[in-house]
Image (cartoon, rainbow, N blue to C red; front, side, top):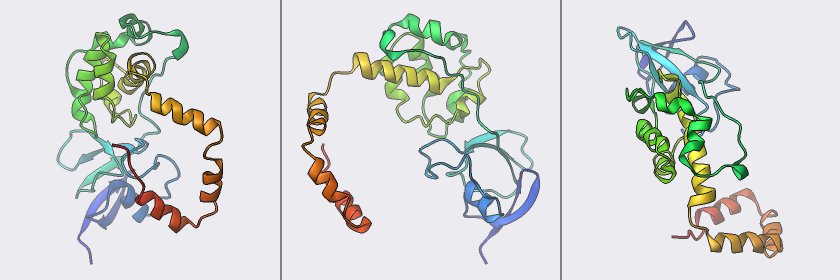
Length: 224
């Protein structure tokens, strides 16, 4: 028998193996996950959840797919974490500080509590990239937020009700379109694809068995 721990999932008590994640523990207990399960590897941010440990009233947040269960864990899930996405046309806005003031003015209400950074399951410097967004420093904001998975946990802990991931996404879009140097070799490759240069190769690849495709993928040349 594996080591077992006691967890409470949505108010019900279960005994589950101690080496499971919250997500797999829910499935072990009989829950069928058809939403908020996504990639299962910490990349998509769909499985943001809340929990606390018996004897500790602190409410904790995590991604269920990468957080191991603990004895006395009380788990609850929410349909989503609060993110307020503003509407804009990337073709009609410019990488200027006032665009943040127009679209996400609440970022200037940040009180510097750092709750967003502490809550981030990716250990990103969330408060710092919001500070860069305030100053219109889109390259720095884009760099610090690059690994954001849009789970929204940071926003759920923010007293100023900032939608940090949406602010960061806007910064990355502005940086990618207007600030980052253009990649000529990428443009050339896109044109080659449009011209049909790789059509025969792609059609041939689609006829191969899946195991051979995996082998080709695992041994592909990676540009440095």
